[in-house]
Image (cartoon, rainbow over the protein chains, first blue to last red):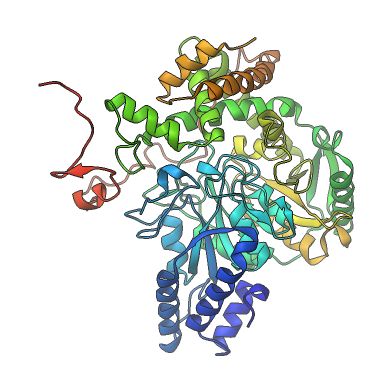
Length: 480
Length: 99
């Protein structure tokens, strides 16, 4: 049993055949992850006691002849914006460097009930703000495929851990592409469900109308099994939907002939070489699978970045107001008075990107600018959602690139925030519309860098999205 | 120019952020650049569009409301456990009102 070669299915088979116990697997997975982690900085910290306790419970279930759970014994990693009771949760921020949550996120409870073994917490951009994982207070994540390159962000640590083999699957969060883009950069599967499909209770909030819990896995089937565990109504999150949850893994097989695939012309006209070439090969592979490929239009595309960065910074400035040096953050030393305590704690504690977003968000909500920026962006968001609804009258899924380029070099884009924001162009439309979306490995550039293909589906049609991704994966991606 | 250093300092006060002079200069430049891009939205006519604050899907009118029943909440001890300074069951902050 080598941790880096495991999948959910192989763990299940190994446990059933008694080739290893869950405790043996957890111990080996922890040893391997701790030894390999310095190469990428994917994990910020491990929780061996919790992992071994969860594994013991899986072994006890097996000893009693019970089912070990859909994720029984599977080594998992959690992005460090997801609360774990008694296990440090930092959100990649100095402000929360010592924060020990008093409760578990619903997603964590669900994973552990299904038998998952959480090894540790993964690195991310501070408060999930970034597209390269270079905004972490605890150092950037290196891409396991090319160590001089970024892993993507903000769930860079989770994607890197799955790609490196130090976790079989991982949770991330996705506000504007933070699961899909690192999945694409690291060559793994990344899934973000419909807004409201999975509980966000216990996620550290960044932009509440856009935040999603998402997942990273080595293949589409593992992703489907994990999503099954996460999906459903949660009383602790009033934004979760009551819609019934279908059997995702059970619907993966079968042909995808006749599936109507739309290609937004606005996305493909300016797509640079290597990524464009791989996408074209991927689209031809979908054609060979029997999909009906046609061009569609999303006319508001050019405005999506501006719309997204007004809304997300506005919501962030509000959500991040709670980090004040009083309740659960570090505190600035020797403040003169209460206001000084707030200001110096936040000035010393937040990194440059968080400050930039808090400032932009405060500005667009401030008197005199609210209508011109925030309200305008909410109206444009409605136009973007309308573009998407219209497109889904003509097609069943939309295929898009994830990023204009594969993983870039560390430091290459950090000095130009607007350029970094603009690179989110292909992922934010799904976020603004709240539709399910994912990145599935499409192939590699001549230099060996992974490129993902994005699949977008109708609200609550995760099953259709995963089925197409599964067919594409089985056919060999763009190399089919 | 969309924004001056004076306006950056005003917004920083609203946001309760202490910034160094170098940060003010850098933020002025970055925000100017980003806000200029955001002005692009004015090209779109939205006079007949309702703002979208949240992703909506079909559900009953009161679907999100749970029964109003008592349940345990976080204990005082757990709530204070991460406070930088606490005492007597409260979060402690510098003196706000002079006696």
